[in-house]
Structures are given as C-alpha cells and as structure tokens.
Image: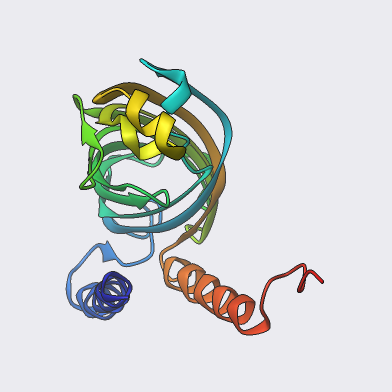
Length: 227
C-alpha cells in the first residue's frame, strides 16, 4: 500500500508541475507534439503489457523460477524535437512483474509519421531488487510503440535478464527441500505486447486499473464460490 501511495503522489505532482511549467516555459509542452507546436515535451507513460513469448534457461529445471506473464511499467523523461520528423530523448523506467521491481533508463528516438502519429524506438538497461532473487549482470530491453495524439499507444517490449536464487524457494515437500541445490542460475527472456496511456492518459490508466481491481475484490472471485 505504501508503494501505491508514493506512486500516486508522484504522478499527480508531475501532472501539476508539468502543467505549470508548460504555461511558463517557451516551447515546452506537457503533452507531446511535433516541432510546429513545441521544441521539447514531457514523456509520461503508464503501460500494461502481457507476455506473448517467453524463454528461460535454468541450471536446474526441476526447481526453476516460474515468472509472471504480465508487466506494468511507468516512464518519465524528456524529448526534444530536432526537425519535423525526428525527436530524441530519454526516460527513466520503472516496472513491476508481480515479483520484481525493475528500474532503469531508456534512450529514445521518435519518428513523426504525421503531426498526430509517432513511431517510438527505444533501447535500455535495467536493474531489479528483491530479497530472494539476485541479479547477475545488467538487464537489457528493446521497445517500440505506435502512438496516436500522444495519448495512447500500442507497445512492444523485449526484456532479458539473468539471476540467481536459493533452490529451496521452489521445493515442495521434505524430499524436494533436501535435494534442492544451494543456488540456481537462470536467464529469462520475454516479448511483451500491450497498451500505454500517455500524457494525461498516463494518469487515467492506473486510476481505472485500481477501480477495476477494487470492484473485483468487492464482488469476490469471478467464478463464484465452489460448492
């Protein structure tokens, strides 16, 4: 709950101060636009992604980590329009897959296909934190997105990292626990597809998601009670 409160506070602070800055700084926009309307603009994205393809390689398949198939991410950064068709910049990246909190940086390139349609290409690195899982090397990611009016986009993301963890984490029963290795090393690769809310919509997306989650818990399990 504390993490959710911090996230919500940060988003609304960004929204407020971004609006003030837009009004006072020449050629800066809170909502992205091509060079005809602004020179620089804020990147603000909330993305919901599902795994379309995954591959992992483990030193011990019997006790391998089975990660989640979804990812929620948040990006904040700055882009600068170079000309009518090109913008460059970068963003700080934060994401969560149900187990791991990831944080990193993404250099970005944008091609303005039209004043309202943009194609984004990004690459980047990330780290993650968890008391059981230890990262081995730097995580890598590659992304692409097709956006409309800097409000919504369809996203692609490839992410890859290596980690190690105690073998007993996925041991079931006394015999499994005794036979589990001390540590397991595993590489994880995912290809995700999803949808982003951008600019003002970056605030709407998590609000709608929280409402949906709240309604689900209020009504109980979707399949009802099993007799």
